[in-house]
Length: 301
Ligand SMILES: [Zn+2]
Image (cartoon, rainbow, N blue to C red; front, side, top):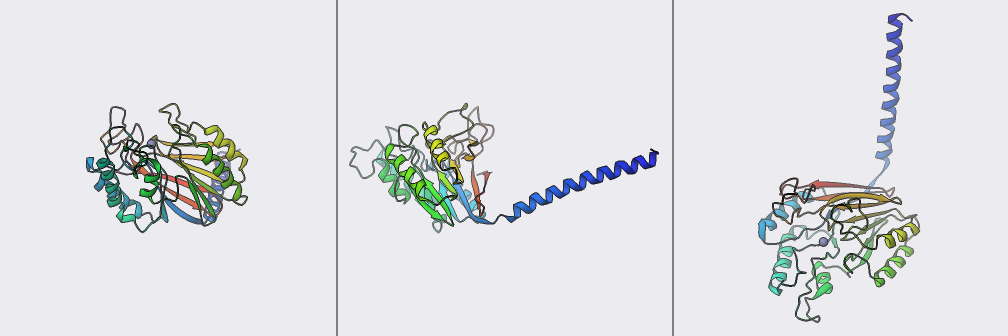
């Protein structure tokens, strides 16, 4: 082959490769464009709101930023207030924390907020179990949710909100029975979003632990319902994590408060980070084909 012919030959080959490469990129983009977004959700978790560290102002600024994403509603993953669960927490302190939550969330009062309970939200140190502020019932009331676990439907999607706060990160028997019936009752192929405080399953179990102790029970149950496209969202460990098992996605979306609104410690990769996870929130897009896009947005407040 003459040199000129060789160059022509190489040029043609490269051109063909480039062209076929372009074709496949276009078809992937077209495929993506065919999906129609039906819902956009803000997932905030581990807000741990408190009067210290200028947290109220910083949280309000963060919520204003989230509103710019034009979300349809909020999922709040628990540990809403800094901490009510320790033995030395007074009634005044619990009231103070919930008051800050009410004041700082005024700017999103027009949105639905579907919350779950976090382990730090309950006041167990109440003088009496009959005290109206004792335990889970009071948190359910403060968050304006129908029960400690519940479900609802939106735009052909089914939402399951769980209470992980049993025996240190587990569902109780009553809730398991309810969940089994709830999943059985929805039509075949229904996409499902599951919100819990503790991660049901995570890739970073080597870091801190802190996941559901009954992951096997839940993932076995989800496998029975593998016709439903199930995606799970959690917080609690303040880490950004994404695990996939049996086609179920388990997203742990860090913590809005990062290092509980504080500067951090020697393990923090940046200011207010918890380990390598920056403070942030997630925007979840749900599409008409049952697919989910989850994007974590670090915030700098
Ligand atoms: Zn927690």
